[in-house]
View 1: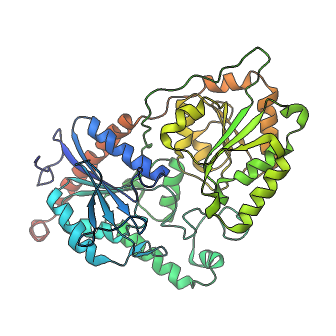
View 2: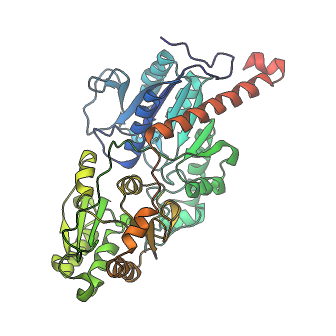
Length: 449
């Protein structure tokens, strides 16, 4: 077993043992954060100077072991599952601290990683940070943020519960307005608890500058925050969709993602039906590769059904997809649509679209506006406005040169290897900072630390 390096010396060229902790395994729960964390694990395994291990939380949908919260993850000897289902979503807290102290604590003390990188803590609980810090006082702990969950109780969306207006800042009074059944004092306790747990981390990582700035405004120290893009692990891009003759247009639009109210698919469908038939014509289409509509509120499902009926045959609903299917699906697509009504952070679909050379049409806020450059590699439209989105689609359909112009402006997205290298550099800097801090303490405090 490789010796960890956090034993009184800063990390230099030694191999770092890294434990990546995720709220889900992408083979069991396919979401952007799960994929990002696993891509980091795979990237770290591929670069010199790192040895990576992966721990993913599973919940009540996955049968527990019985005697231990820890379980194997198939045949992988560097991956493990951790069963946790006694979760308080308001406090982001795990009520089952017994399993934490017994199984998680024992596991990390046995593994002895130099770095523990939490890619999320939904379902796992913030107590996991406390357990790791208690078990590994010399290890570096980092946390990646994927949305605003510590700031916002509304699924971390920073969108009002009524009316779906965008929320700029959180406060006990404002949050009480969204959740009148919860007292302002409870929101204040929530913030104090969450910040006390996050303060145990040595550093934070955000895939977008926009998200990082929101956390600084909330109260996290800017010097502990680094912006590192999640890496994409895809092998070969697909060619542009073949046009049969010179009169063919780049007229195939597609939506990829969860069909929640915050992804704006209702805005998109409404926009499609507003495009004049003289512009749309028979060759244009929108394909929705979407999942989990059946899990959404009845009012939203009914709204989608009504909009689809009005759109008639302009839209094809293709249902959910697997990540491995993305290249074949992209072959059918010219434009990728991202009409989210919340801020987003760094959606993996942006990277996937750019990897395959497909321009995006997206909302003009948050991480979307940061990642997609209007008029360079994509088109922005006014958030939550089907009228404005419809006009942008008309622009895309009527201008035959626009697609190729935007395609030429696309920059290759960050690979999982490049992202792993950036993370490794950050890990070493954090460990170096810990070493310097520990060795500049007064002698009396160093001895008692």
